[in-house]
Image 1: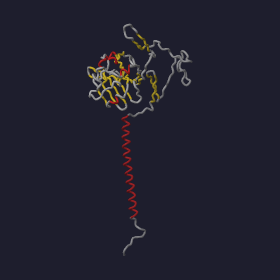
Image 2: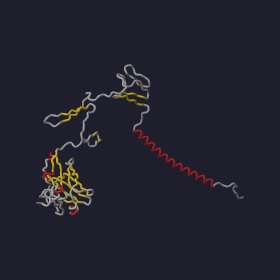
Image 3: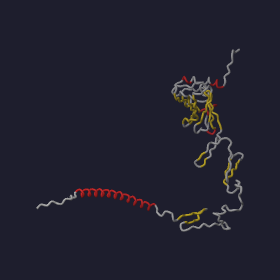
Image 4: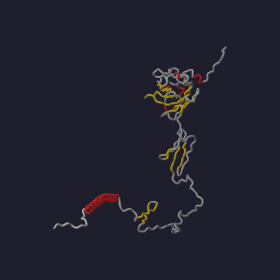
Length: 317
């Protein structure tokens, strides 16, 4: 008769074996310097779209990073053209508790895939050297049952209006027709459901706006400055010598012919050139005026300094 019974739970049982790695996976990196402890990875779940047509036995742990702040995991696929990164996970040391679940986010073209990884103890992996360690499909192979097939569906909708994009719309979404737009669902057995959006002119799919106080059969403009139109709704606008009126498409063009500029760019360039030349001549004239003023002052000082005194000339007999 046994003295005691030991009933292991699922995660505790995985901590004593290689799962979610395969039994024949060595869990040692390519340099044979690092080994993933059995009690570090205790569960992994990765949903993969069935349309991707991938073999579950070809998924493996390609890279594991051990750092003072936490750990990083990259799950890849052994494809015909090389390794394809599928999902990544970041496990911080701060706040970690035994058997805690972390998100395993997909990377393009698996960017809408979200899985999970459960981390057990950190004491065993802390005994391994830190760094970024690479694994091969043989040493880091995952059990096929951790790869779960799912059907790709609509995750969200984004409304694009010109250069503006809305945030992701999720949950139950209703398509509502606007003005002169008709939305018709088509469901035929054996075929994919369809939604047909049709642009319809004047089909009365949208009710006309009825404002309070509107009067039927009455023109929008009743008078202009108290002047009423003719009985048939005509109102005359007459221009003068400087005001010209022209009829345009759905409108009236009013042109002031007297104040319109009469010079173009070529004439304005000539005027600007003449003004610049006049400005240069002005500067030259100012310099000449200054020189002339100086000469006159010097001349006046010379003549006044050479003037004879009041006495008469001395003559010899």
